[in-house]
Amino acid sequence: MDNLMNFLCNYAFDHRIGYQLDSIGFKADEPSVSNGTLKFVVINTGWKNSNEIPFQFAHEISHVLNGDIGINKFPVKPTLLKEEFAANKRAMNILLEYCDLNKIHMSSAAQFMISFGIPTYLYDLVNEVMNNFYGIKYDVDDEF
Image (cartoon, rainbow, N blue to C red; front, side, top):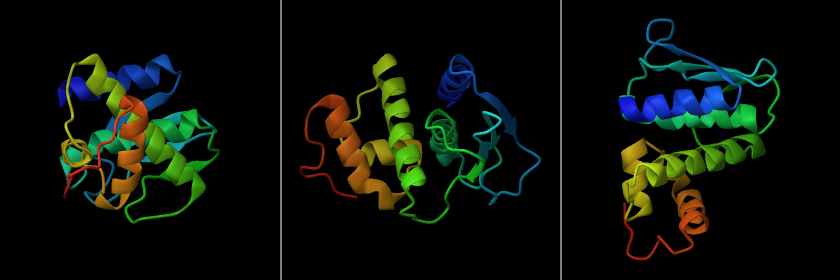
C-alpha cells in the first residue's frame, strides 16, 4: 500500500495538485475532500476501511484534473452526478496506470475492485474502463 500511496502523491505533485494526508483531522467515517479551485486534496488516512483510501485519493485527484470547481467530498453512497461519474472513471484509469507501471495484472473487474476498495455499485463502470484500458472484455464469468 505504501508504494501505491507514494505513486498517488507523486501523481498529484506531477499534476500540480497539492495534497495533505491527514490521519487525525477526520472522523473514521468522514470522507476525503478536494477543492478544485485551490487544486488541493485532503485525504482521510484514518478512513474506516484503509483498503478504500487509494481509490478515494485517486478520485479526489480526478476532481481537480477534471476541472471541478469548489469543494467535493468522496461519495459514500451511490450517485449519478456527472462530476462524480467522471471522477470515478478517471480514478480507475489512474489506478490501472499504477498496475500497468508495476506489472500488476488484474484478471477481472472484481479482483480490481477488491484490490482497491472500489464500491460494488461501480461494477459496470469498472468493466467499461478496464475494457477500454486493456482493449479486452473483463465481464465474462466475472462474479462478485
